[in-house]
Amino acid sequence: MQVSIASTETRLAAEPSRMQALEENVRDIEKRLALVEGQVAEDRVSLVVFSGDLDRVLAAFIIATGAAALGQQVSMFFTFWGLSVLKKDRRLSGKTLFQKMMTLMSPGSSRSLPVSKMNYFGVGAKMLRSMMKVKNVSSIEEMIALARELGVRMIACEMSRDLMGIQESELVAGLESGGVASFLADSLKSRTSLFL
Image (cartoon, rainbow, N blue to C red; front, side):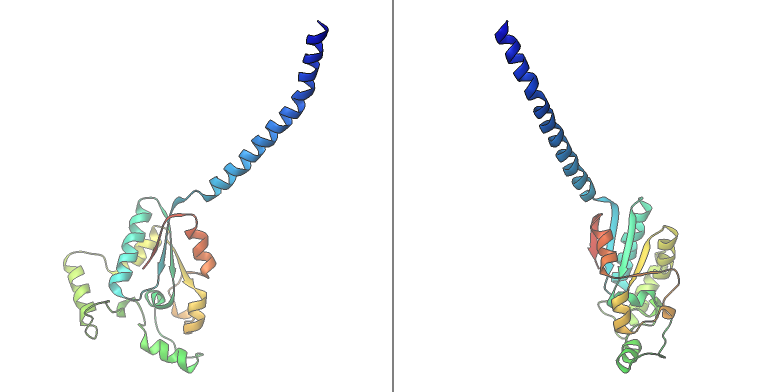
């Protein structure tokens, strides 16, 4: 009887340290689970719109509106030539010589975007728009409006705007302005990220 009481006391003395070790393991597992949950992709789609070509911009808006219609959160980050689709007009005042030249050489709005192949001084873009109208395909301007209705976030790259001299007054209303961190914040949570 003396031996069993001593061994029971030894086991009971060891229990708090075992419990403490188990509690530490559980806390460690909970921390790891929180990290993993923070890295799981959400129902998001992030697009970088780099191109200023009508056909490529159309593809970007078709994907964006399709994803938004399926319930995905969609963000579109417009940078460099992609900013042309967001322009409503051209302004030369308050720009450096190179910025003025860039303004004059790039499209003034979505209506003057060229196509990536067979543009032929704008004829290709007019042909594509005509073919789209005949086939009842929404124009880029209608797709932009649809994207807004569906809650697609449209972000104009601050660095590209500053570099190219694109003033906020030249852009359509209702845009967000941000840098690469804005895109990456969305992209890192997205199931799909595309560069167009």
